[in-house]
Image (tube, rainbow, N blue to C red; front, side):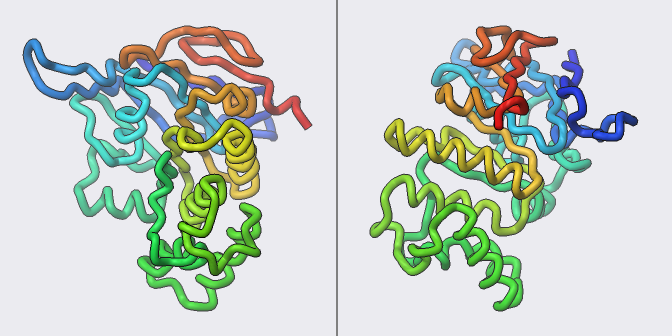
Amino acid sequence: MTTPAITRTGRGDPAGGRAAPPAVLVEGVSRTYGSGARAVHAVRDVSFSVAPGQLVALVGRSGSGKTTLLNCIGGLDRPDAGRVVVSDRVVTELSEKGLVALRRDVVAFVFQTFGLVPVLSAAENVGLPLRLRRARTAEREARVELLLALVGLSDHARQRPGELSGGQQQRVAIARALANSPRLLIADEPTGALDSETGQSIMRLLRAVVRSEGMTAIVSTHDPVMMELADRVLHLSDGRLVEGHPVGGSVTGDSVLESPADERP
């Protein structure tokens, strides 16, 4: 039932010794809504692992279970069966208090709808998670300045969301997600509300921040650019991992598509 982790040569353990524990482990996860004839089997017996530092693209048609699976991984929803482990924390066994701590300290989310606070400036939106963590003012301001520079918005720090384009708002949302230095970034269709050109720039930005921040990321997407940039592609259909046609790679192992992102400059 468990899909073995697939890692590129030299990834995860440059010294060639024992591989690092997975950053994300999903074992036999299922999630059903309703019961009887009206039951919706959103996720069905899904298993895979993600190595530290990998960017994984999760692809599939609308209604294939991508959002439900991401919510189970990030602790926003509880599966009916199976186990999820993120950075050595068994997510499926955490209390509500433990899930709050997980989402505050370990996992960060980027959504299609941005989710920015309209009355706050870009800098204030990015700094909000640090305020909730009661970070010192100097630490918060330095981190916000660094993150806005990272996403290319240093000159827009004082502007409110309504004064920014859609692409700029998503950049602010990404910077905010990085505020507390999460170990796992979960992005659910982050370019769904953007035009093609802006979406491509956001996808490349995600690839860059995953590398610069040294985190792991799982991104649900229909965008072929993200599939090309990803280290791995997982194809979900009717709630199950299935084999599919790779973009820039070949089918490897159990329903995992590898793309040669490491070979690009």
